[in-house]
Structure formats: structure tokens, C-alpha cells
Image (cartoon, rainbow, N blue to C red; front, side, top):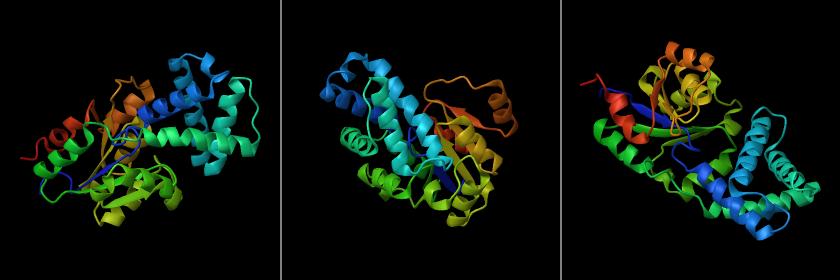
Length: 247
């Protein structure tokens, strides 16, 4: 078989429509809470929630907070921006209530399953897996909820491995689980440095799924060029990109 023997994917905002579910969830929850949360415009409210997720989830990945701690921190800081103080117990309950609305909005990106189907047609015998930064049980719940568990052979989570992307070891570990060399695998993710550069530096074919047309920093752009990262705007383009020049 020409092309990669294994194609690995990031989960959130690559196959799984995480940002859309977060936006829908926080807007619905804030609307139910009413004052003072309802005073913020939807776009501003969503941006605030995304920024807090980025800040505190990375604290969890760095080991500064545990998984529940980063959830409490997000809830506490969001409430504080609206003049509301939450205790630890109140912050946990607040996040749990929000989480129900987030779960209700879970879905795959429209191009996710067609990409997998097209890869299977273009690369007979290709195998699929996931590498995700996060808690294994929580990420598995999402994978099963949207039906990806029937398509993915392995789910590799940083919470289980003990190291997070972009560290080479998590990519190398995933390849060892599949029994392939990094050179025989590709990795597709929506974050340039965390996903594509990290994978390419570990010897895989790194693919940056740049859905929003983000402009990388000069340093990231130079590093991406050095390790031959492939930049794409849609999962639809992945099969052709991974088979180009192999026929």
C-alpha cells in the first residue's frame, strides 16, 4: 500500500465539533441563568468562555490543576466576570449544569465521516486512531457518543500516557501501539504547533487542519516549513494530500 498505513487524528475541532458545542452550550446555559449573565452579548460571552477554557485546560495539561480543578476554575472565573463569587462546591455544580447543555450539542464536523470513507477507498487497509490531550474516560465518552468508536482502532489520551502533545513521546507511543514506524503514519490536527509540528517533529507526516484560515507566527511558519507540514482547510482534502505522488 502506498501512502501512510495509519492515519491518526486529533479529536476536538478536528473530527469532533468542540467549539460549536461549547458555544451552543454556554449561550443556552447563560440564557437560562439570566441576570447578570444575560447582559453580555453572545459573541463576547462565547469568546470569554473559550478563553477561560484555553487558559485553565492548559493548566490541567501542565499538571497545575487536576481535571475537576480546571472545570471549577473556568466556572469561577466566568462567574467572577459577572460579579458572582462561587465556592468550590458551587463552581463544580455550575460547571455540571453547563456541561449538560454542552453534551446536548455534541456532533461531528460534516467532513469527518466522508474523510474517513475517502481514506479507506484511497488507501485500502488503512487504520485509524486518535491522539488527544485530555482525560481518557472523558474523551472516550465523546468518541462513543458520536459513533467514532466504530471507526477508530485506538484512542490515545495524554491523561493516560502521562505526556501531552506536542511532546514526541505521545506520537511515538501511538505508533508503537499500532506497530508501525512514525514514517508510516500521518497525523491530522487543528493546532499547528501542538498537532502538526509536534507530529512532524516525531517523524510522522504532519497535517495542519486550518479551518479558520489562521495566520501562524513567523516562528511557527518557519518551523512548519522545516518539518514539511501540510496545511489544509478541510478534511475533504486529506485523502488527496496523503496520496499525492504515490501512484
